[in-house]
Amino acid sequence: MQSRQKAAVDEPCLGKERSFSLSFPNIFLDEGSGGLMEKGQDQIEFRCEFCGSNTREDVVNMALWEEGNLIVIEDVKARICDQCHEQFYDSETTWKIDKLRQEGFRPENAEREIKVPVFSLRRVKISELNFPHPVLGEDGTIE
Picture 1 (tube, rainbow, N blue to C red):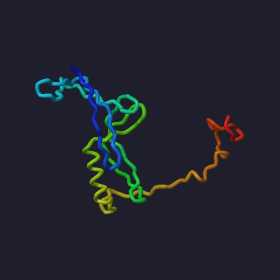
Picture 2: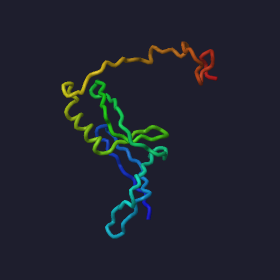
Picture 3: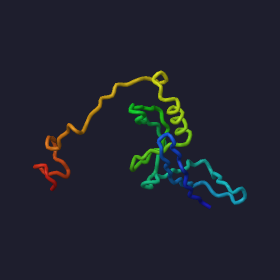
Picture 4: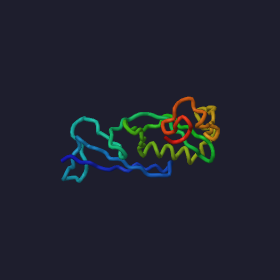
């Protein structure tokens, strides 16, 4: 019997919980033990909860704000949706991020520091665009 299970990915470090569907094409419910068992060596397929597309495993960088400071975390294991690019993190990864947060992201523990330019949209005028806006007409009004 094929099974389709939902798995919750707890993201305590990000202050929210996400869940995504796991499709187990080669896993069946073992009636005797009541657990899931794998059939064969095929890879388990993870589907995106939001759009239903396939996801792939990758290593990404994460940027977040902590007490007014921009923090960059490298080497973050994630599953990324091929269609909508939503990222999902397993419990080990979220616990590692939580550990960094509990330690206060102290600069002396950082691998390195980077200089980051900061931009503001307050200074950008739509009327000064050098290309046609997809919604606004040439005169700056909605078409």
